[in-house]
Amino acid sequence: MKKNYERKHYFIVSTITLIVLSPLIIWLLPYTVQRVLFDMSSTESAWMIETPSITYRFFMIAWLFLLIGSVTAYFYYKRKIAIIFSCTVLAACFMYFGLKPITVLNSAGFIFVDSPFEDQVKYSWEDVEKVYLIIDDTTKEQSLEFHYKDNEIFMLTNRNDVQNMRSILLNISKTYEFPFTTKEN
View (cartoon, rainbow, N blue to C red):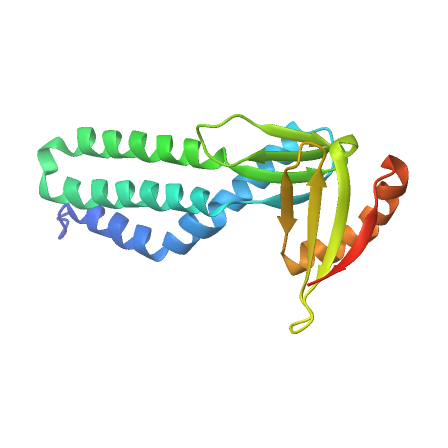
């Protein structure tokens, strides 16, 4: 039985697949993996997990390495294994470093990692000095502003997270005795 296709076409199919799946790889995969990793490693319940934009940039670079490996392997078919392996390793490294930046808010406090090369910064609820609910007069958008005892400030602007945190903050502010007030903007 004769086959009417070349083996090189597998690399074209993989390139087309990577292009079609790019929104899933770049936008959905980082958030999903961070949520799974944090929920599996944490003993505290996570109220909010925020994936910073730098994570998406790292995943975009990883996706580009996968795409470059697939296209290059088509043109340099004799070195396909070395090309695919090296591009996959580079992509996996970028994905690994991209997963480190995260912002988590849970019952124990806050965890911040702004860059893949920085250490975790943790704040407990005892480190919170005051929390403001800021309401914009013109747009009626709400945000939360956390002030810590070391003069650091964290802003939470996502509408759903602010709505979910308001009732939680009422209870936590009574427990840890920090003021939770409204601030007009």
